[in-house]
Amino acid sequence: MRTIALDYSGILRNINEKDIYEMIDSNRDMLSCILHCEGKDSDVLGWVDIDICANELLIREIEQKAAEIREKADVFLLIGVGGSNQGARAVIESMGDGKPEIIYAGNNLSPDYLNRVMNKIKGKSIYVNVIAKNFATLEPGIVFRVVRNYMEEVYGVEEAGKRIIATGSLNNSSLEILGKQKGYTLLPFPLDVGGRYSVLTAVGLLPIAVGGTDIREILAGAKDMKKTIQSAALHENPAVLYGAIRNVLLEKGYHIEILAYFEPLLYYFSKWWVQLFGESEGKDGKGIFPTACSFSEDLHSLGQYIQDGQKIIFETFLHLEDQGAAYTIPSGKEDVDGFAYIEGKDFTYLNEVAYEATVKAHSEGGIPCIVLNIPKLTPYYMGQLFYFFKYACYISGSILGINPFDQPGVEAYKNNMFKVLKPF
View 1 (cartoon, rainbow, N blue to C red):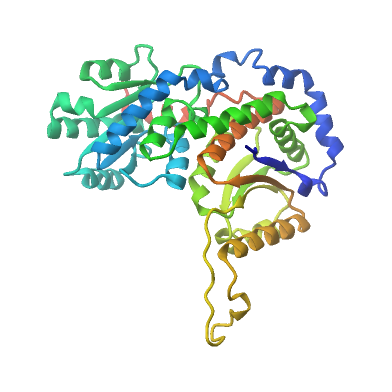
View 2 (view 1 turned 120 degrees about the vertical axis):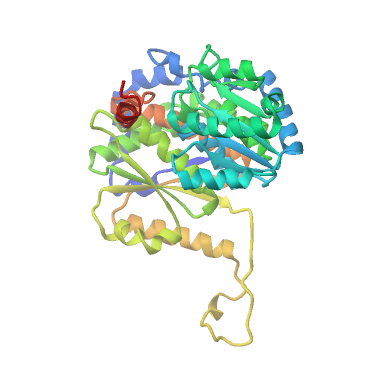
């Protein structure tokens, strides 16, 4: 099977390849340690070895539980915030089959949203997966209390317990204690894996399986990408190159990165990507600001700024070589609408022309353009994408000189909330 391929030829009018190689060579010892999983970060690298964080026994347990949920549930309620649902949602919304209906909760504190969720699940057969590493985060914790009380009223405590899966740290956390008391299915949230790196653990794999996607294919793609990253020479290593390029561009004044795509199904993947890089690198007054654009729609809004605004932006394009679908434009008896010139052509062709025209225009306009060529949007290649970006983020953040695994800034708003909510 092929792997996704990095094409950075579109940035060489903005920076020299020599600059990239110098960035790599000046960090050679550190990069070698990263690629061999050696050094100070060993306690947060549980996501690197896929056969450990998603071993065969766990995969079978997840597949069995997912089959039960798909058979018996009308609605699967996924309660979690940030890394506890972003990765799974990226897969579910792009390639899930819609059976059962999956509803996301515990990712905000909106009373209107919660009322809508509770109204949707009334009278339906529901299963719940609550995901929280230490169960101290307010949004999923308090929403789970609401949902738990509702389920116990409807099903009784015992039956409700059979319908709840708790994914959390199995180190005597409050969620684990509650789950044992109530009879929940308990799945591990590995202690050595942070939320935004957790999609290929039970955190992401159960919801993905419930959504109807083959998790073994996702894991196979991730494993193949792991082999590529850990075996390639530094100057040819896609994750090393991407991490080095980002830092060179930052030094040149490009401090905003846009993840751009021409397939709307990648919307939630882009949200996962934004969290991965934003939470990993935005600290100590450093970091590239990550954002995303869905083209061609956003070409009619932000496209103007990208083309003619401040030259502080670079783009990483997710390019699907095979778009996986087709729709031919019909012919008309007369050219009333003025579009006869594209009769008989396919939307696949139009989308590809739009992609090529955009990269050309932005590149010629002074925007560095990186391209990740993806053979097709499948579970296998989604697994490759997840693993590639996680490793590249680890590399990029390390070159930047920050800790890519902590998130001290996230605690600021929580502390202010708790001062109000827990004043004594």
